[in-house]
Length: 106
Image 1 (tube, one colour):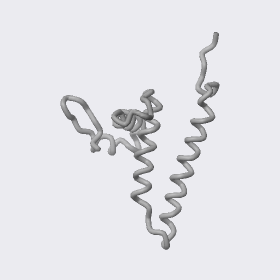
Image 2 (cartoon, one colour):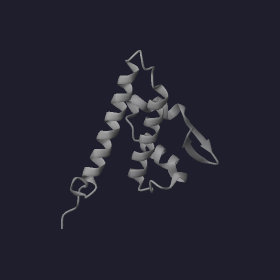
Image 3 (tube, helix red, strand yellow):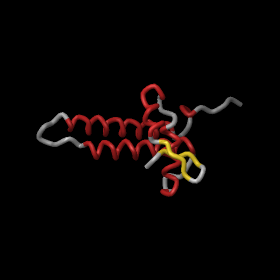
Image 4 (cartoon, rainbow, N blue to C red):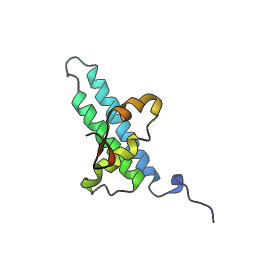
């Protein structure tokens, strides 16, 4: 019996659709910034990136999407997987220790 891969999982297509939606959403938001009549949507872009980071982290860790109290776990789990060449300073500068545990600052 061979090992199942994610590509053969029943969730594969759904996850790809979510990813496509997120990428399109971010592309559209960035495109709005180029339109002088609309105003830069910096807040919406930042909010989207934070939400999507939490979503992918929850998917990685298996945390229920309905468990709002575990959002930080998902966010941190994904952010530390980002390429350290490009995002290393973000991770290092915003890491704090609270009650003996390492967290990325809110």
